[in-house]
Length: 510
Ligand code: MN
Image 1 (cartoon, rainbow, N blue to C red):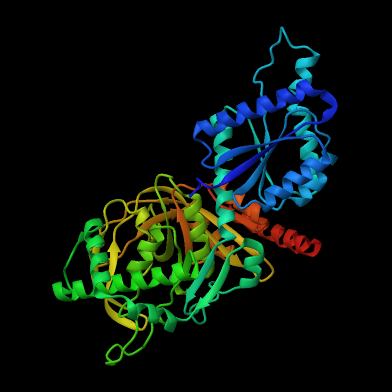
Image 2: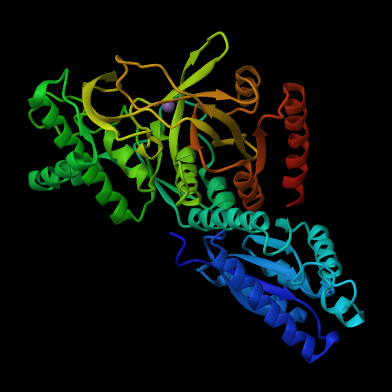
């Protein structure tokens, strides 16, 4: 996912120091970049684009970075003093995420040897501050990472930023198909899709279910049988209430649905989609000419999510898009991510928690062990039918849920730290699920989420921290309301009030 991408590194200096120093700046930059690339802490390759010594060079390189499809962001570092007015036109031209790395080639001052030449050459403290001033004055969105370039902590912060930059670049190429509309009367899944594309890049289109059915009709039995064989390898087969015959019929039809959806996504160049359980093709399943899904395509949604296709239920295009980006950022990290939905509260003496599930659509990436493939009655929507699904419980440990809501005048990203705990056995609830406690407490966490206007759907990850979402909000310029272990309700309410003013003014200034 990251292998074809690049982050560009520009070192800043000026002509004052002479040829020899410029050669040293180059050599130092090359050594630092090679070291960071070799560390494995930054998953996107950093490419050295040279030393900037003039306004013309800065503008040229920033324009090239903006135009280059492979480049997801730019790292700047002022090796020596680089008078920042020479960066103005470059910073104006840059339309990609920027990271300002405040570091220095040399680690400790050689107290006995340090002389004027040494001090002149190791001048990042001087140069980076001048550069930072210009960025602040120009209101340039950026991440500032401070630390020695060999330190793992600093490298990891660059790594987070690079992952998010890759996610933001992908968002600009993400097309989300809505199979059917968003569910009638639901407010939180609605919003301004034009503004969404302007702000975040995602392109969201309606796709007629009747056209999806054209694909469904063309899926052959042989194709479906082949996919069912894959299911048998990947999952534990568990047949109970449906009996064997209905089980395999439903699994096969679920496979057909998966193949049909895959083909539409491929043909349409889409990497995210939504479904609506009230719109699955023909309504009357007993009609001899019936053409529709015989069950909610939940198994397809689960499996596609695991491959990085963003998913949102009930036409929730915002969450579908966010799930896609989350999966990109989460690539190669340990514990996984999923679309989730708040379902049922568990008021328990010392462990009040929220059961996360969906009807079916939870991503197997978060499963604690091998999912079982089951077929059970699902009595909701237009299809009260035996329905195939993957069943599992999720890993325990901390994670973050995220959502984006439309507040009418702006988008707000909301995240919440949660602690996933072990659920009790639920023998009569054969769906994938997780159980979590919002932080800092159930009461404060859930209360703050509601005050922020959060969704009942979310994009959840065990691996992404607030730092990722901070970077995401910075790069996209949207509001970020975070709920974590430090949150208090009065403080959070005041933050929301302050943001109301800030974004009102910010909008007027643009
Ligand atoms: Mn829902």
